[in-house]
Image 1 (cartoon, rainbow, N blue to C red):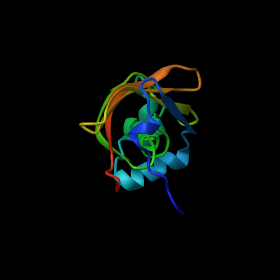
Image 2 (tube, rainbow, N blue to C red):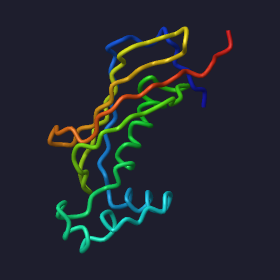
Image 3 (cartoon, one colour):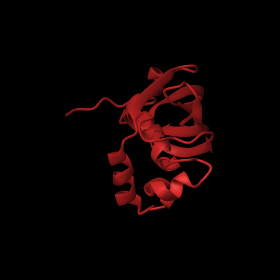
Length: 143
């Protein structure tokens, strides 16, 4: 499969992209298998129901990982790499929630190879669950 690398000329300030996914029980299981994070808040209903959350919640970084999909596949797209990401977790994410992650380009600096993005993630109720900022670069391309 041949991939087309994104170029600065493909991008503009104000451009947006999004990606949606419903969080499943299987996603929690895969995240636990990959990370080893067995915090009972995420894996034990009895424990989680005794907390102020009232039930199990998804790992924050599982939800935030959707931003990685945006970087590499949507905006900027293929050939972009993370430089940094800040995150503020605003609300819990529960199994069955449908999340929509969105990026908006706030600045482009071709000379320094930097793309600045505002990041937001909303649930199916249109409530913000995560906000943040990202900095991305494009891999160098042959002339």
